[in-house]
Image 1 (tube, rainbow, N blue to C red):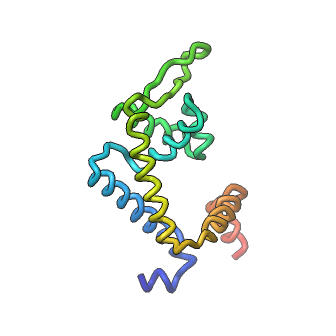
Image 2: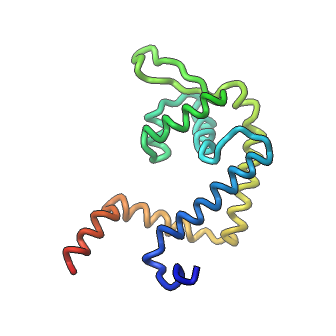
Image 3: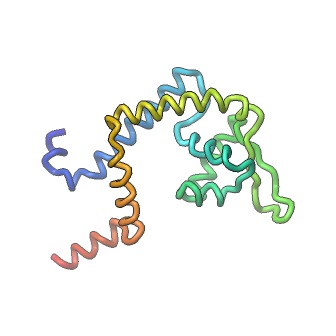
Length: 159
């Protein structure tokens, strides 16, 4: 940890990964303890379905800013565990129209209670300081303009 503190800029990604992994595996362990068959990255998809009854893979990917293959992987797991069902679009049979199953709708209030408690946990961890979200917004905007590889190649050329 001391080496990481001495080299803040060089260890930035490692620290983000360590924090992310800690939260992710903590959530997985919580779900296991509560005998739930869900995974931590599913809650965002559940939240999308609260806003819209039917979604496509493309809509989910666009809303969550993740790749379609990533969404397909999550959706397939959710379908296997009977949280999502798919119907073919009547206009375009290549498109899957995804919906929550009866099982998902039944468990949603319980899951929302768990996610609410998880949100309070994040507030506790952040000591009620929300500035980090402004910093994350700026980081995401900066990366969208020019990613790590592009920026590093420029710095290599300037040295």
